[in-house]
Image 1: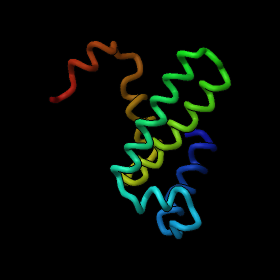
Image 2: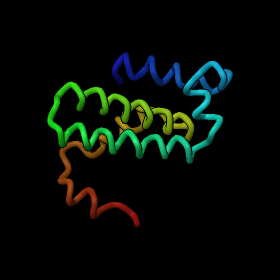
Image 3: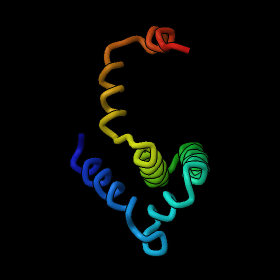
Image 4: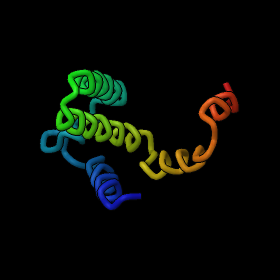
Amino acid sequence: MSDVLNRLAELLEQRKSADPQSSYVAKLYAKGMDSILKKIGEEATETIMAAKDGDPQKIIYETADLWFHCMVMLAKAGLNPQDVLDELARREGLSGLAEKASRKE
């Protein structure tokens, strides 16, 4: 996992015990998973709009926001970015259609 993802994952873990009045992430954790998921939806929409507008810097900025909030969700669920990277590695070299067909419903 990249150093940035490692450092961010560690910081997100630390924020679980932080005061929600002094930490944006602690405030998200305190509000619960529904609030985190709502924020991911907002960030996904902003990312889509940035891509539609075609401004590379806006696309990067909004994608960073989306990834950040997805990492908050993972941490809230007791997961980390390495879990997602492991899944991507598992899928590497597989046909997307074959991989999707192999999933248990």
